[in-house]
Amino acid sequence: MSGNEKSTAIYRKKISHRGTLIFIGIAATVISIITTNFWFFNNLELKSIDWRFATRGTKHTSLPVEIVAIDDDSLNVMADKWTWPRTYYAKITDILKADGAKVIGFDIDFSSPSKTNPGQDTAFAKAVKKAGNVIVPVIFNVDRENNYVLNHALPPFLELSKAAAGVGFVGHAYDVDSNVRKSYLIMDDDSKRYLGLSMAMLGWYLGYPKQELEAQNGMIKWEKLEIPLAGENKFLINFDGPPKTFPTIPFYKVYNRDFKPGTFSGKIVIVGATSDILHDVFPTPFTAEGNMMPGVEIYANVMDTIYSGDFIRKPGKIGDFLYLIIIGIITSFLIFNFKAWQGFIIVFAEIIAYMAAASFIFSKYNYLVSLADPVFIMIFCYLSISTYKITVEEKEKHKIKATFSRYVSQNLVEELLNREIKLGGEKKEISVLFSDIRGFTSMSEKMEPENVVATLNEYLSEMTDVIFKNNGTLDKFIGDAVMALFGTPAFYPDHALRAVRTAFMMKDRLEKLNEKWKGQGRPTLKIGIGINTGEAIAGNMGSLQRMEYTVIGDTVNLASRLESLNKELGTEIIISSSTYEKVRDYVKVRQFTGIHVKGKEETLVVYEVTEVL
Image (tube, rainbow, N blue to C red; front, side):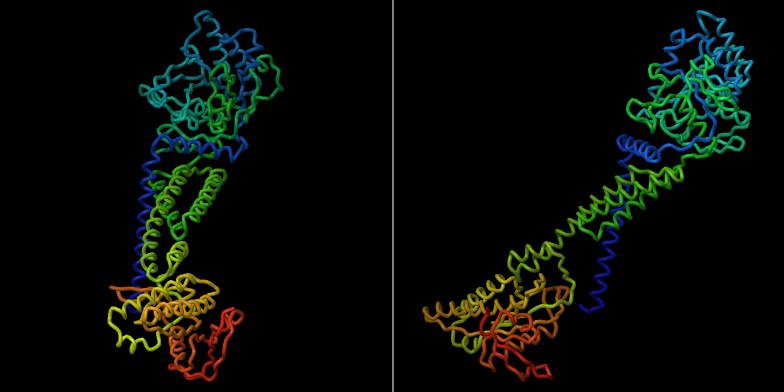
């Protein structure tokens, strides 16, 4: 195969891997997106929103809101037990108006007239009418079998409805985990449109007429306000903080005028329950165990979000899908070139970085990107790519095992499987050993063919065993000659010494064979060995039909020439000067200078190894 053909083949293989990589990334991402539509992942995504709120912490409120709380102390201090007479609310209304409250809103159920004392309803309605700035609640029934949606309006008793400056419905939007993260802003019932309590109070505070409100294309437009919706008639509340972020004063203190004058001047005042026993507290993103948020404070958060314009925004469905696809592909590319354990570290770091980025984007820009879905995609892509890599690696290991089991010992094959072996070709320093039987051709002509084969097989088996014991590679048999490599494919710094020791062990093994053969009346053998050390190109070489692992280069040629020198010099083991420099502290030698070899113009210095220390 020519260099160009080889480069083309490698390029095509890389392109194939990249194509597979992209396919796995997209497939794993699509599967993940489908999988994450289940309740478990939806719940995780909701919890990730809570985590981002907790990480961001409390932010400053921008709207002057004061909460008059029907708390535990008020329930204990007030003369009447719950449910209180409506004259309490009439007095509170008078007091708040007198102190300058700009808007007063009640989060209390007034849908039914008083059965025991109708006069208190009249007193409350008169106080509300006199104040002229009171928003009273419309109650919507909660459909618990249909995702906790609100339906069927229950307005305040008639006298109060007519007296109030406006009405606003109360009720919260629940997510699948029963937490409140969104709020209904408008609600239609029998062709009549109601504003939420928050919207009604804020509209009065800003002086926006209700009839100017428009809701379409996922947006509510009302005078200068543009409110993005997250689902039908709902929007995401950008909570300012945990419970009691907004200033709160107990009901009984207001009732007894136990507050600083001007406390409520120019403010929006919400009157409602905060005591747990009245069951008007709800889990929110800032909810810790046993610390739920009162409904009145949720309405305060809704108003502050709208007034400040700090709306939480999310990517659209198409944008979110493309965004998740990109994350899957990026994750696949990040880990493809690394081992499974390295990929795990990369994906772990990617998840941490993504979570930090998602938290920062939310805290800084009020932008809510998906968190659970991308994290699952990263993990699933990692598992998919790792499975693919293991399959490819096993295939590669099988190829390496098939390639080298003929050349090296089984132990070395297992060692090679745990290393990164480049079968495509690489230049490296190695030691090459050539051995040849002296006069074997003429001797074999005098022997029966079966005896020639038996003798040669026995000899080559012993020589191969010696090579394997020193972690050498049997490159090939060339008739009765043996070519062995040291330092490739597995590299050892002492490859030159291993080659020299192998030569002496080959010599010792042959002496034992000769003793055996002599006793059997068979001819004995003599060998010559040449060793050279230097750079060579190692790799799988051959044709498309047959490939073999071998080495090429001048280092190989010189080793062969050195083996032939043994005949001229009357020696058994000859090494080059480059090999001698590597092993000089471990051998005794006899030096030969001015040596000419075929293919070399300059003379060489070579060494006969006489002893290995």
